Image (tube, rainbow, N blue to C red; front, side):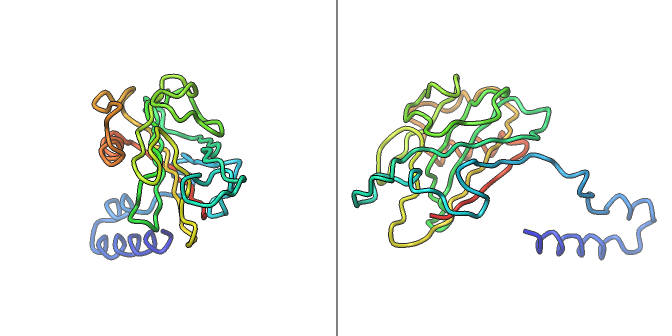
Length: 197
């Protein structure tokens, strides 16, 4: 990510050569203080760290009692003032971006999810939120934890600040991919954290 920013900055500088000073200065990279402060974190694991077994799937074989398929606690801050609701999408980056969890219509006043969000279309917490049905190694609403017993995969959680209070075009039959597309179209900002399992 850092190398991409450096390359883009270099391209902007190259492109700006020959422009009037005022025009060139308007193309300068945003200072660190000007960057969005939108951030996502978890009390269960550090960004890039190991996701605890309690958050791993229970449908991947074996009988490890430490695996509970409980969603990790998540907290976010610094969302744009224009946000009207939030959504979270979790993907397995090493398995064709397989979507493991989609929760949306999270009220704008909410800034965290507790551990072990109900496996229900309309979970009790956060009130008003909805989850997509996961069809894969398990069939359930909501969170399906890491399921890669023979490899170490990277799982990414992304919280999106949305420009809509409710994604009314989604319902209990919507697929994870459809939901992810609708969320991406309504997203005005996002923050992410990843973990390995």
